[in-house]
Amino acid sequence: MSPVDLQTPWLKSRHKSRFQLFNPKTAQIVAQHQVEITQHFPTEGWVEEDPKEILHSVFECIEKACDKLKQLGIDTYSIKAIGISNQRETTIVWDKITGLPLYNAIVWLDLRTQSTVENLINRGPKKDKNILQAKTGLPISTYFSAVKLRWLLDHVEAVKIAVANNRAMFGTVDSWLIWCLTGAKDGGVHCTDVTNASRTMLFNINTLQWDPDLCKFFDIPMSILPAVRSSSEIYGLMKCGRLAKVPISGCLGDQSAALVGQMCFKPGESKNTYGTGCFLLSNTGQKPVMSEHGLLTTIAYKLGKDQPTFYALEGSVAIGGALVRWLRDNLRIINNAEEIEKLAASVGSSHGCYFVPAFSGLYAPYWEPSARGIICGITQFTNRNHIAFAALESVAFQTRELLEAMNKDSGIIQAILRVDGGMTNNKIMMQLQSDILGIPVESNKRFSRWKLAVQKSMGWETHSDDMSWYHTQTFDSILEREMSCQKWSYTLVPKTDRQRKKE
Image (cartoon, rainbow, N blue to C red):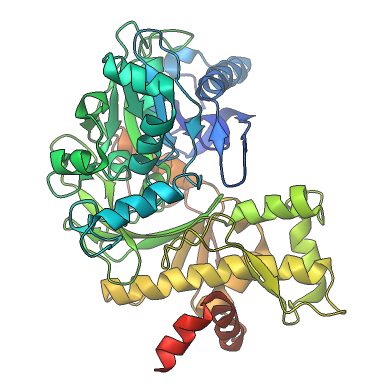
């Protein structure tokens, strides 16, 4: 590779910040660096991150990745554009005069807003959590940014004062990063893209604008909201560091980025990402499809100012890969994520042990924030190996529920599931998933999804007929696990609901 090849970076701000430099012609990651971000749990159900730490971690990743690039004999002038992928619902409010955050970022799976959600639902004449679905595609839930922002306005004095003095800015992680990287209090650009805006419950996914009625419903001033842009345009230039004057020209919420990266550009094409949670998205084309089975309607992407908006149905599960960390950090039955595969393989079955990891309530298709996790079916024979297997099964069972709902809403029966994320490295997990779904599961083993998402979001042409960079591993269903699925569902659904179904 010569120094003249274009290098494309991609920022991921999740529980890690990662800066990756790509050769877009070969999908090769030329250099990268990542930094862990500390999560804070002030009390049960609360999850926070420090916005300043997020920003500092991004600067560190940029510097270290550029150092590695230099060691390869490639000048940073080769970097032509920057794209950002981020947690979508995580909420930050900051002071535009001082440039400082007014409170920690409230992370997407935080549960502190449960009473706020109940109060909002009870305000409606029918006490219906889907009262705003026609405009937002979403149920009123602790998951989304508007209720987190409402909580900040109600409980954080610094936020109240900043709003009253016209000093407050609100944004998801992408908005915070773009504002800071393009100058912060010295002319920083306050914007977001349509995929992130569609997760706030303040954005009308039909008009593609902030909605005055929605803002009135949540009693949120529109003056603090960022400008909404497409997912592919120049938002501004980097103002400091080694990448000064490099344009930031792509922005996608993390799950939209994975959908783009998996090349799901046609209606009916779907992907499932196994990250902290599990996120199944299916492209529904240029018209939003409202779910009747507990899924979300969201914006998939808009790849340019004058390009059409594409929509998706989404099934969101709060706890996926986070369950592996819980086994490591809380139960301490494994020392690292890789060990769970060995434990599960040693038994090949949970032997009747079932795990429902409702640590943050249940998301799709139930939307029940008061639900809590259980492990059941334990006998004297049960050991940590069976619990490890049951944990992997629980993620696969939840994905099956999402896929069944997706098939009903879209009218399209999925014949194969494309997957990505950290858990796809676990072969036992992927084989379980295929068996439980009864369809092949296809895993991309070279992380080329990020390369494609970068190219698309920044307006670079992608030669879809050239598939030499695209390497996959397919897991075909080999065992029928219908009875296990039924038993897990019986464990999950409350008794009253089972009785209602019988009636």
